[in-house]
Image (cartoon, rainbow, N blue to C red; front, side):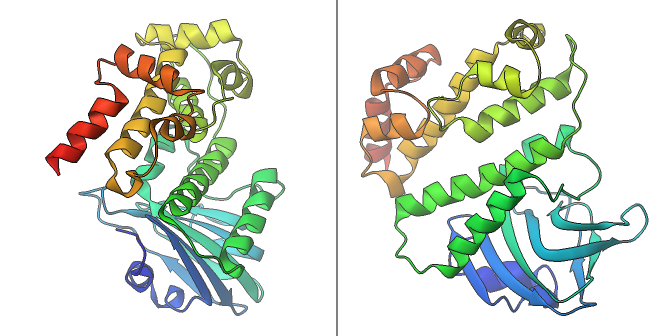
Length: 290
């Protein structure tokens, strides 16, 4: 598992060329690294064991200069490449280049897989790509004293950043009453933005170029609704924070705000609708069981 203190172990699984980063910055289960490669350097990304996704690692590379994807159906150059844990790939630096990388648990982005393109290249002119380069440069060059909570926030930002780029590059599925790909894509958008209280179902329909009624029909055909899905994703995040002893110092209101609820009463109503104990009781029960 990725985590603070085991950067060498993670990178050692990927090949010798990755084991000498010039900078590393871990944030809970996500690791960021900075590398320098000479022109012509070959970079290997091996396939990982398919029997268990719990320990699989995915990667997102951001290169200052284009890197070439080698092999059948992999031709072409890119400055941003997603590395799928089940698909090996060979890359080559076309010129001396600086590469920044995000290594994250595959389980944290696996939900996007049904609507992912087979190709791993990302569009260079994407605003997300440009923003990601600046964000990673800041994380890897600025010295700071992380806290448990700041580590959590940066981890979420990095995971959601990768989610956003995968959503952006996914082909637009055709809407329809049984379109599971559309539901998967909508849920990915919700998961990526669930911690933002201002993010709404209307924002999902706009991003997918659907009317709100069309989006509701797609979910209704599957026995759900977009509002219920978004609410449950926020409940799941709140439960994760409540049960994590690293965040025992967070108050109920803080947990509500950082889980996408506008206030603690809204979170309590969502817990009740899901048939769960109140957040306070859930925390008390978790504390007494430890």
